[in-house]
Structure formats: structure tokens, C-alpha cells
Length: 249
Length: 95
Image (cartoon, each protein chain N blue to C red):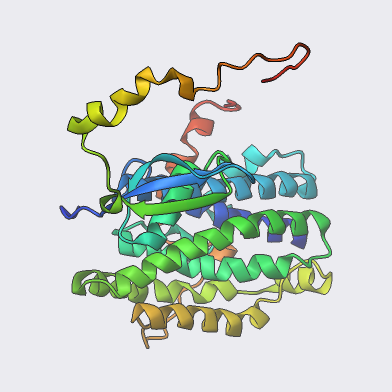
């Protein structure tokens, strides 16, 4: 299987799984305004995933459709980072997860704008506008929760402490990346890391929060080794296609 | 869920260049910045606008409904204030 195909799936899977996670909150947000905000973001992410899966289906050349890729792969074939499959938890956890991801994604899409692959560059341009808003939303909330009450500060700090171990994987690179970078298609994540660190630090400072000093890092999602959560997500996500094969909306 | 309620904000959206902001509804938000953010999500998700104003509802001063008669009744008999007493020249459309 070619590298660009795998590369597109990684980006698509991140979007799909986080979009699915957020959509679990539909009707359960802490306030109706926030409920709609989070489901808007979920829809943006699923929309991004749709564009990417459609493109991957063409690149893959196996006669698979975007739906096949989204709904009919097995758990080990999904290559999203572990961060996006972590449970919603309390509102602080949802926001902290989103903020880590958005901080990375804004920089990633900005870098992908100059991809030699026209289609990926176009998807990046459209997605970047959405993602900048997601980042603004999650950053503003992180600042308010961190610099809010003692309770909100303690809870969102706890969420950062828990999720921090999954953030290193955002910068995971292997031979797939090396291959697409060599072709001018992919993004050199190593170059993004210092910019990401700075971007994170600026918001943390305002939020009066800090990253834990514990440097234990958990990786595996990019190569299909997931936490126990992904199987449960997929059982909901894939239910309709499994129960009613080939059904269309 | 917290039992404390965020303050209420009134939302004004300008639909496109050249038209004024129009009141579209209200929402709850902890502060002005989040009120704009929520307004974006609640009231512009179908491309309704290009500009958002929010104002805290408690800042809006309104007339007393009990004074409706003295406020609004007198103008009802002053039909000459409407520009309907002019002869429109023939051939003029869209007046």
C-alpha cells in the first residue's frame, strides 16, 4: 500500500474519531450554547474526514468508497492518534483534549498548504479556516477554566496531566512520513514541534496552568495499536453499516 | 451541572454589507468574548451574517408597557405624517 494513501488515512482518522467523540455530546453539552458549539465542531471534523476519505478512496485504487474506509475497516486498521479516542470525561477533559489537538492541527494544516499534492493543499486550505475557529474556541475555554474558580482550575489541570502523555504522538513520524516528505507532499512534524510548544505555552500562561513534568509518553495509534476505547467507538460508529450493509443516507 | 446561570446577551447580526445590524435573539454566555463565539455558533451557522454585536440584556433599557397608550396612541391619528398625499406622476414605478 502506498505511503500517500496511508498518510491521508491518518489525517482522516484523526478527524473522524474526534468528530465521533464530540458528537456523543450532542444533547449533553453543559449549556445549549456550548452543546451547539461542540456539535458544530464535530460536524466540521466529520466533513474534513469525508473529503479526506473520498480522496484516499481514489488514491487507494482498490475500488473502495469513502464509506468503506470510514465504516468497514477493523480497529487495527485505524491509524488515528490515541489522543482523539480518549473519553469526553468532564467538560474540562473535552476542552483540554480539543485544545491539544487544535493547537497541533492549525500548525499542521498551515504547513500542508504548501503540499505539492494539490488536493491535499486544497483540503488543508478549507479545513484551516474551520480549525482556527476550533482552536480559538478551545483556547478561550481553557483560559477561562484554568483562570476561573479553584474547582475549574483543579479539574482542567487534572485533565492536562492525564492527556499530556498522548500529545507526543501528534509528532510521530515513520517511513510513511519520510516518504511523503521526500515527495514534498507531507509535513515535517519535527519542524512544527518548537512552534507548537510555544503556542501551547502562551495559552497555558494566560490560563495559569502548566504541563506535568512527568514525561511518560504513550504512542501506538499511528500504527494501529489503540487504547481500549477505540473498539467501543467503532461499535457505535459502524453499527448501521454492519447491520444494514451498503445502506445509504 | 452548575445551578449558576450565565448572564443573558442580546445578539445583533448584520446580514451583508450595507444593511444594519438586526436583533436576532438572545443567548447565555459567561462574558462578551464567549457571547460573540456562541452567537457565531447559534445564529450564523447557515451563513446569516458577516458581523456580530452582543450587548448584555441587563444593559437594555426599555419603555414601560403600561405607558403604551401615551407613547404610541397619539401617532395613530396623524395619518398626514405618512407620505401618502402626493400625486405620483404617471410613468413612475417603484414608489
